[in-house]
Length: 136
Image (cartoon, rainbow, N blue to C red; front, side):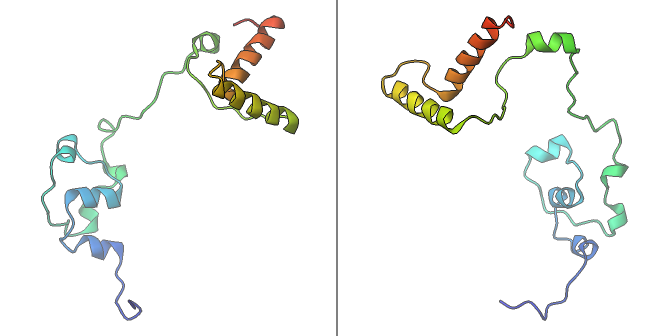
């Protein structure tokens, strides 16, 4: 299809068409939908008659916006309370990487734990840290 002969219109003109519901206008303008209307099926509503009437993020009240901020733990507490796993990147010699992959596959076939590369590296690094006086 060729659209070269079609008239282009600005975003503000598109918002005045009356074919956009509140959810669509909120998406385009970047404003948050009220919680009760986000769960219900939106009814087609006429778009605002002027773009100036559309709320922008700057015009929303600060009490309605709650940033997702976690409290920061003091550095002393952080080391003792970390749980779960974190992603880290290391460069290993190619032969060590190949051996790790081979041993991991062999142990997995024999169903001998640890067989995942992650578990094997975790165990080896934990042993090394313990042997060098860095027990956690």
